[in-house]
Length: 148
Image 1: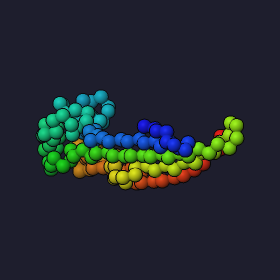
Image 2: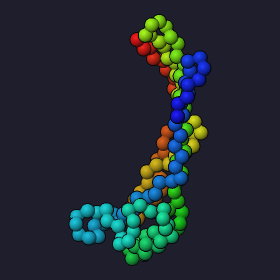
Image 3: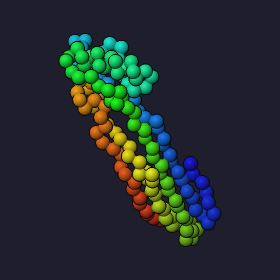
């Protein structure tokens, strides 16, 4: 969203609010003999954590039990929300016909929310579903542009 303000100024806002991305899930094994080691146990969807998480967890734990691996708790399917609000303020100073100077200030992730990213997709590993990174923390920058 962008809005013109008085005195040749402008403010823009970009907001992303996501309740949580589902998690990719695979066995890390070639279960059907096609040479690809990203197969899933029969019935397990490509992503888990939405729809019927209890059913997804049961299928994952049944697969793990068949391989003598400890079961996961529901925490492994927790979806991490994503929140980001970015702002940009611009002030235009006309210099002469066809020439102007623009000053701007930008702020990214102004709430400084920790947006988790990544995560293991192999349901055989203890690292399944654990985020491995995060997007950048709050950042600000300013600048100027001369147009002619």
